[in-house]
Length: 447
Ligand code: ADP
Image 1 (cartoon, protein in one colour):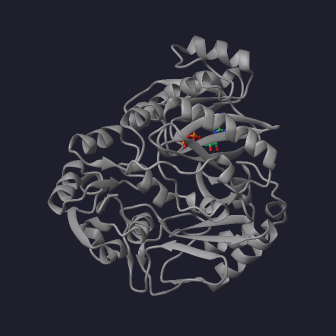
Image 2 (cartoon, rainbow, N blue to C red):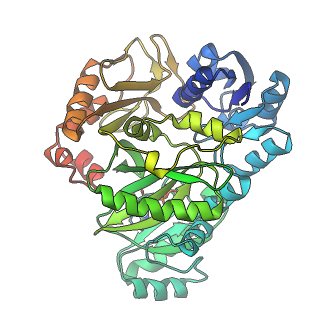
């Protein structure tokens, strides 16, 4: 086992990793920008190293500074969290080239899954069902027209290098294909420096359902069931649940087996998530995330597993030590992402937290780096806390989340807590009756 780990991240996820390290008796090194000198992850770590100015490209994305920090502190492994360098194959490779362990999959697998066309062709060959669409990259507008006619409109043109919902354009009928093709390519070129695009049938009422997996270095892979992340605004998730209100245990077992068989054949190691669109009883793979995800706590609550501890253990070369039949599911979990944003306009609201009081009680978990007097800096992601609840049934989890949000005091800055309250009170949400389009329609309604 490692004796010291560097955490290459900030905010709640840096704390999350730090907590797992502490419980394993591992020393922690925090890295931080000058804007984060007073951050909680810096205060709680055994050692802290400043790696640059506020802008992420000069600090949290500064590979040379992070590796230097690891070297001078004698850290043996690096946990990248999510975002920043977590899905950067070159970083993973550089870390390993310096004789350190990257807590995550191999650079090769990160690279494969970072290119969505390669990810889809790989998964298809391993027996994972896909959204119908083009066979790889579209070579021309003519090919786009031909494939669109075959799969049927509406269709989506997507960037192979895409992320964060960018480089994606819908064509509702043949008259829109030329524009979708050129807009998606331009956006992809500007945002990712790669204008390769592919085509998928645009599903009109899917749910976003993803499967959490863990693999060791010896070909053993298990899944921890699904998370329903359909509640999204501009392709950004806002509220997640485990399990999905739409999936039966039999469906979970079936897709789980498909996925674990595929990843075991691939030799995939450490944590990963396969994202699917689910419609009319069919799972269609869209992409794989080769890292820990923001919403991992809902899985931890229903499966009683510490996914970060597992990531560390597996990276140290330990075996999984359990099989699929040892993974059990109990109750229901919901996570609300609390962003420092105006709950109506979604404009970011950085500033000083005048008063902070976190909820507590049975089945309530808060993952946050906030404290009274903390200044939310304007440079980074606006998510400042995650409220996670666990209860025997979905209805009880909803009631518990209501109660927790009522107790939550964050004064001095605006947050999306009022929006979460409205969602939780909505009859359609309470019935579990929603698709990926539901939240945008909901937020557009007068209230
Ligand atoms: P990104 O990497 O940018 O997040 P994804 O491929 O994961 O891109 O898609 C993001 C979101 O876009 C999905 O969660 C879903 O809401 C929507 N989406 C993607 N592909 C399709 C599709 N074929 N049909 C309908 N919606 C889609």
